[in-house]
Image (cartoon, rainbow, N blue to C red; front, top):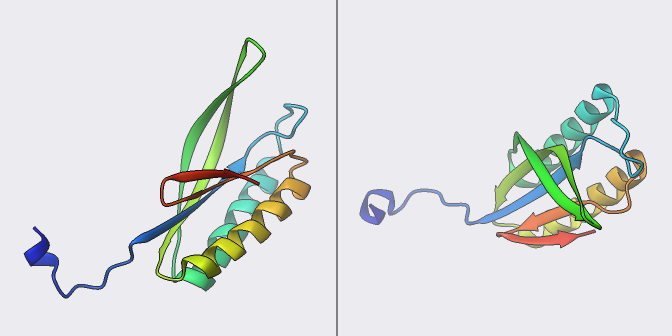
Length: 116
């Protein structure tokens, strides 16, 4: 397979930002706000990396013995400028924390998760 791809343009670094759909009080965020956050992340990732993709996902975690389930949106992008992309993702994560009234937001870099 690699012989067929030899000489093709390759982007080997992936960065993702998880967009919440609830605030830290577990209240649903307005869909317009979620869309706004997704659009801004996709736009700014595209500025840095040339493009982005968004997908729906479900996140789970426990608070004490209670399982919390939340729909999230993941915006991800492939890049060769990983340091620039990380700087942009951290800036966006801090904006999302404030905008969505969150304690933390997740960034994933090459399959490693960081809680911002």
